Length: 382
Image (cartoon, rainbow, N blue to C red; front, top):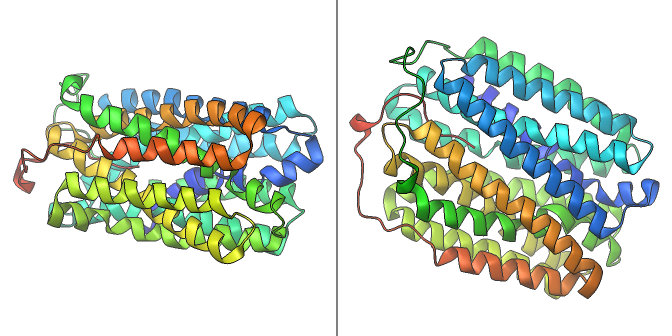
């Protein structure tokens, strides 16, 4: 039950209230007059708010307050979604997107700890990967909403707000909120220098992934595809992203190095295809399917990578890695937004693919394999 409810929290906080800004960018542009540069700036601010919330969630989890971190995530996502729904001007929209996007940051460490303390150790790695794939479920749901009611974005964001509170309550009821092994000792003893390589890789991957997450629906719509087709494409992206839940098995069989390179290559290929012919429904479908599967797999590899390098503090390691991933998204959204205004969408997506290809070369050095028995404490998550 916790795995299902945790997947639902990630679906709402990541797939809807965080990435929903990019999904509804065509409507925001039409109703509020956003430029690509302004949209990139808003997305960047949302990503930075995520980083701040992730740091807060890490602080709370370190002190045995994972449940408080969970509710901080749910309330932030709901409150921000309500502001977006009521926005009549760009500044109000920006504030709402910033607050809504921050919810995912606090959700990650909270759910890592909840899964680690509730699920049997033998099932934990796979459970973490499945919960992590909730992003795809949220993107799929968002695409269906756009498909059914393309112009009713205010009602959609009201629904996101209610959903955020509902699924947060569901996880709260499903999780075991037992205290950590040593609740009196703040901090985890994590050594960040161990994570220099994955932090760099996450930063680059986030910057490259920001292109499609922020501007993908807008590019396909402006290239001649109808909002209904764009909604279907976003559904396909979400469905493909659910396959990213297999990343845990891929890391276990091939190791993090090979899994990271393959996932980065898939994500970069999807981005290039979207740059090549965004006005073709068939090409865009293939591009977004590859991107969704690849990007969520990248995040899943980061979960496993952090757990292997810091088995004594996997939740804390994952929080740091996702802060790096999201910092990259913030920088990428701002820079790629400015590039889109200056040089156009094709150049922007090629540049994004280049960043993803560079991230592939920062693959981990698979020097150690930590047995399950060595893992302890709070765990990893997206």
